[in-house]
Length: 254
Image (cartoon, rainbow, N blue to C red):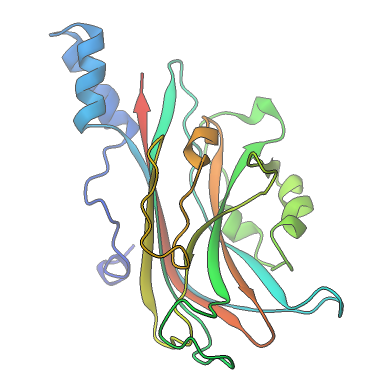
């Protein structure tokens, strides 16, 4: 990825130790201090991350498959790498989503420049492998490169995800997604949005029209699972224009 592309939506965290980095540091420490202390030191300052960026302009236009359904669209814009499956416990503890996006630049019913009347947004889902035997750390094709079509809503993508060997992890309320960020209404220029969720920490959100709190998300994210980011829009003639997005996942080794 060239330097110009890296300048578009840089990662929120500048330092992302890899799993190999963290295991090497842990191994060195375990030769000098008790294992429990080595684990704590790595957890405090050298936890590994999965970080992925996509810079690719997409436009998701709302569709009307049947009159009674209403206008809507869902597109899979970005997927994470798999949470590693290791011989010891892996606990995802923080996730950061960023999007660079805009809507069509106008609105019929006011709200311009605010989150009022916002009908373009992003949602995250957790996917688990249908076949447990596929829970390995070998790389897989990115879903955004395989599933390039759009759907009326996220649920409508289920059969296509199943064909790729994945299915949804449901929330306690049986919903399939968590809202991440909305776009500002009637904002033609691309703007950066972000939200951070931490395991077992309530997310403080000043404006709930702007960001989601991610309740229970990290508690359901397990080794072998992946995270996907959906671009959404509703209402006639609305579109979600996406230029870039990132997913950063910090996890703990115990």
